[in-house]
Length: 265
Image 1: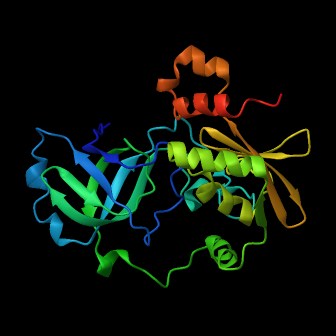
Image 2 (image 1 turned 180 degrees about the horizontal axis):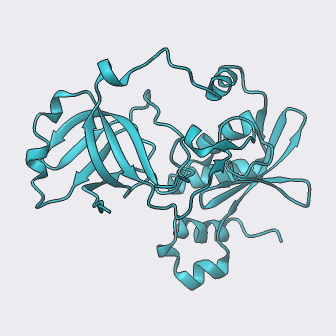
């Protein structure tokens, strides 16, 4: 059996799955980088690549350890689909494929556009995107057709925010540059019902909880209105103290959050 060795890694601003979009947003003014390994003659391998506007990245879902034959995609109804009919990370061989805009090649660093990859994702290969071969705009989207059509309709739910949650969200964004609303609210506007892939859980007190990476949004649903009541941290004080906040994602922010907003029990 052949072995595969990464040729480099991606550098993005996404450290958790929640922060990364499901698909790259081509309209976003975003820059990311791919750093290739030194001492492998990759300088020669990159020759002529800067003549292309887009490239394919072949990469490794290095955070995933298992696979599932059927999965529940994050978009659309909670219906299990065959994994080969999805872009789920839970694959027999955890390999991903992404098309990205190429802005420049500078030595062993590629400057690229919007990505849906986490920082540090290993890259296996790079190939040029060819519009005459790789583009099939009339192709059927299968079950995704219905999801895409629904996404064009107005969001069926409206998100409102109570005073405490508004204060907490503003503090996280201003003091720690953690913007939970921009990623969490669109999820709630589309469908706030319990969903494993979207990490929405029903609680015993009648509320719901949306896991947003290292944070939690607690909310209630009444008709078509979603009311976000408060924000919570994903790590307990004991975990933060035992492992060291500096070693945990947003750990320092969570320590500050606990001081600023003591638990109401």
